[in-house]
Length: 386
Ligand SMILES: Nc1ncnc2c1ncn2[C@@H]1O[C@H](COP(=O)(O)OP(=O)(O)OP(=O)(O)O)[C@@H](O)[C@H]1O
Ligand SMILES: [Mg+2]
Image (cartoon, rainbow, N blue to C red):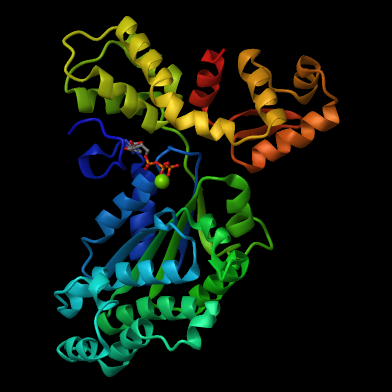
């Protein structure tokens, strides 16, 4: 029960009760076959929601939730994706089929040992074959990215069917699949379309996905014409409200917190729980907490952690993009014409770069020709830079 920078679960999970109960009741209702697509800005709490949903679903005997983050991929190849997801699926079901080994080791086992291990399990021939096929794919099949993906999803379905459970695959940062590669070729779009087809046909497996960049989520799920259009219940994850930031602080500090302090933390974080956790951490163990102390914590966060979180993100942008953001932060500008005037560029040029920044998930379009920072703390960090 202390402030944490890792996803929040259980009693550390503040608010979002309605969404959580909607997700848990929908996903556990055997008459419904609808997954969820969650969209929300960076650090707003998407992973926490998926993990808390998974934790609550795992209490249902007939449901096996499986959390998998696309950000766990290092090489972004279809082979790596298939292997890691296969391991996660087998590990999730190992209790159900009485398998006592770590799935990771199966990939290293000899064929003879593998057969022996699988023989020792009281599972149907069909499931045994599914597992064996995926672990010992023939070299010629390894060239076929579609087949590789299909095998993993059929494995989840086969496990669910065999154990008479519903398998709920919670795929975090799903749009990162767009970057999936096979032999150095991008195959992401095809992979997403294929997963959609598989998802449509599978009866025992349900997908839930999340993503932080609006544009890529639109391409994946929200726009008519996108692969998963109408296959999911779409939910936008908003920052926490002020009362929940208060709850988060009091719960973790285990004492009353002056209203002025709550106001200060709220103003700085704008409800993004990650920043409330990070500031809260610095207040732990202090006898008296006042606004001055919070101001110091904020300053220290911006200079220390800010350098880690934002410096790299900022340096990866083009010089024009950096110039625009800098002007927007320092002069509190939101409209194309004001920015254009400030940096001495044409509105057309500025508008083009504003749209790039929207695509990259740095800015949000709030109105015609008006943009704002997605992350209020990033803006405050920029304001502090010389
Ligand atoms: N409901 C919540 N209650 C308390 N803390 C939360 C809640 N949701 C998120 N947090 C905290 O906020 C931080 C970010 O949470 P999380 O990793 O779930 O967000 P995210 O949207 O998945 O972030 P990212 O964009 O980096 O993937 C973590 O420190 C987590 O503990
Ligand atoms: Mg996350």
